[in-house]
Length: 255
Image (tube, rainbow, N blue to C red; front, side):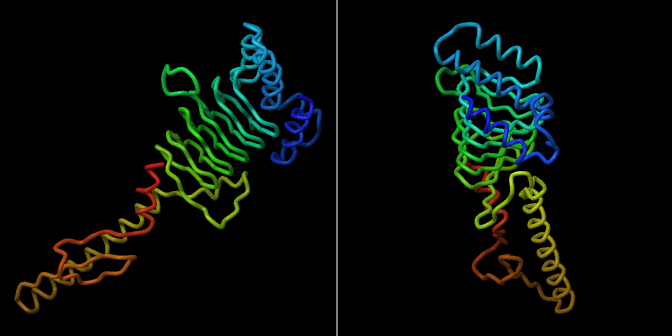
């Protein structure tokens, strides 16, 4: 337990630029204090001691604003930053070196028994206010954007944003855990792509209207919009929208 607590202590200096000295971290960081209480409560809970572990977790909640059930399993080097409003359920499992911000809930979805809370892999970042609900498996190196609601499993090395959470792959790009300003906005990308398609279709309609007014003969041409360009399609009676951003957005909804 002492080695785990040392890892919890050291990780704060690595991930929080506001951490200046050990006294400040020890007495003024509720995330560290909540983990210290939890290590004790979890040890007592593991040997089957009744009541006392829950009392310890309740006292920790009163002092820190962080509620961790004694049954939750938390790896070493976990950093709960600020922490107010964090809720971690009884059967939750958090891997080593996870980073959890304020307002996060690792909870269940009903009154089912058994494993009913999420399992987080190593080096997972859960942004402020995010909710991960149910017996889910969140892979290693996953980043969950602030305010996201995750209801399905997420494979390793992915970024999840939105409500419900959608996967946005960042293959080949390494992003530091604290760089939340680099989270992609998949909704904005899809809206921009749709607006571009609408503008392209409007331009085609205007072109056809000008041709009709000039030639005074009815002209009906069908176009297929692909990757920002328009192609005539004699076989298709309607326009079809095909865009990588849109496809990834729709695919991400099925995580």
